[in-house]
Image (cartoon, rainbow, N blue to C red; front, side, top):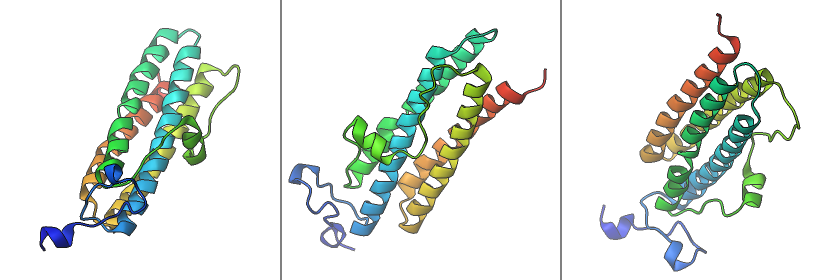
Length: 176
């Protein structure tokens, strides 16, 4: 295949400065970019919820929980730039605002004024498990279009999410 045959314009309708050449089809770029946009919104939602719980933690295990959630929030936030940049690398677009996040997120916000430490941790266990499922579904989209680079990133993030879930679950349900 020649470079001329490989060059496609997946970003039709995008300004020239945002149109990134890729060998992925227009359909692949559209599907993968949308999947990444939704994933990014969910990651931002989980990041903010984790930080909120970190800020509002109290009780006998305050220090341990506070530090655990701060570490996890840092790990979650570290995913955001690679997700957005992957969408751009293949010629897609990504989130542009808080409103855009709200339109694409699937993980639910938590606006409760008070929650027990156990309830916070249990909610994060459930959200981490949900994020893992979302990433597995995103991996399937990447597999469909043979986007091994995005799939590879997702595999690492799935492993990291499973680790966070494990730590949270052991913290809530572990035996003393």
